[in-house]
Length: 225
Image 1 (cartoon, rainbow, N blue to C red):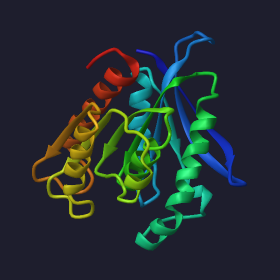
Image 2 (image 1 turned 90 degrees about the vertical axis):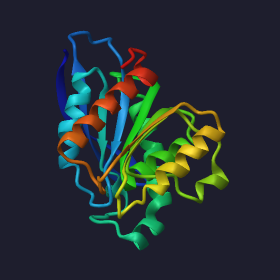
Image 3 (image 1 turned 180 degrees about the vertical axis):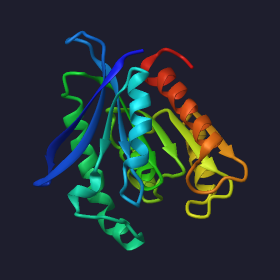
């Protein structure tokens, strides 16, 4: 299992400096490239809970970049009005992020995935619907914004992970996304966790994490589950 090199990177989007934590496998070969996963936090803006998961993904052979997309708008917490106002700007920031990540020496630019939590999942799904560089989406308790159905150019293989009792993002969002993916004949997998609300803990979190790794391997890395 490769060791992991951790660093913090910055790049510019819209004239603002954007931070990103990088977790890259270190296997001793300077010329090695890895599939990349860009990870997107939720409305709370915190990335603390994502860091351990990013490290685990990197140990499995993925170059992981945890994006502070709130840096673009100076946001600390996003309520609904803030989301409505800034969502297009965050999408542009994510587009710029992909442009930055695909040029990293450790990254295979043909194998880029988005992994998002809640608001970050909405952002990942929305961006992947217009950005052909995105090959896979793993979405935790999010959905596809209604407005994107007007602008959608494509969909890519998607893993849907949702709690049945989610009071923040109703599980209906997962089923709407499932229906759309089936209509477009796009590969997907879905896990709905009975009795689980918004955000995962303990056994649910472990199961979802293993499912995410297996899905990324299958559709991004080609190694199967």
